[in-house]
Image (tube, rainbow, N blue to C red; front, side, top):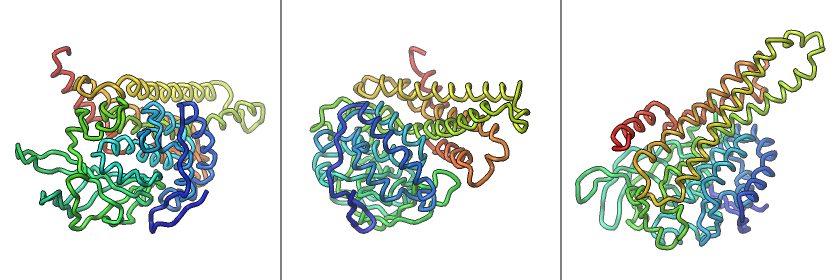
Length: 405
């Protein structure tokens, strides 16, 4: 593994692997898991991914599961993205979160005009982050837009070559505000080191600042084209996933880090429970015999089943919608995909919290793996897009407005 320093951006000197199947991707993810777990303390201390983790993710080819074949990716799709994210996050939630963002962005990057894609993908190890919560003034000027402002919570930005920013602009025909994506090179932005959190400490989800940055029109993308499956990138990519809804591709794995972190906590607690079961004849373990231990076992089984169920729900939505033309998917089904992401994250958090209650005093120690994962699960479910109430409300409105409701 060789890294070359490009200022704050790192690039491998080798070509990433090209994965050929779901099974190959999962094997690569499983092989990385122990390395990610060994680096959890370092990842938290750095408040970003270690360079070695970035190199591992790139070399393995895992970041390319949603990347176009034309540019060295594997186009394995959203189901693979979800399960790889769950596997990685079960070892290190921060690594799983950043991986999910980087890999999902390969789907979005494939929708830009071809010239912009050629520019981005010229670096085979390119990774991109985004901001969807922004402030400041975006002004339409000759040839493009100018933006002075800020973007918030840009996960993994320290290692990125490009930023995709969702901003509000005025439609020149209707005069209404519309969302447009701006593609901005790393050298045009400043990173504020303000990511100090109790969970997902290693994601480096920092604030970015832009001062009078010009973005040419060919480096912009109308979000309506993204949602309608008619983005300019489809001129050069034939895989149907690039014309499908973003909710089953770009954000398909948004809840997967919470699933993976919950699985990590359940796995760690399972080992603790196994130890208790094998030592109930020892005097200090007598209190766990009988009903007390049986209650713990029942709660553990319920928590595992709960996480398994929402994992299946997430996977089912990807399998059903990630390759259908966006124009054929109803507003109710789009809202359902949005609804099920926070439902999955919140159910994973509830399962983890239920089991953390069984950890006792040892789970409070700063050295405890259980409390670290517990913090990560709750942090992974705290994202604005994973807030249950407003997504549930949106689905209900869409459902009631549907003629088939």
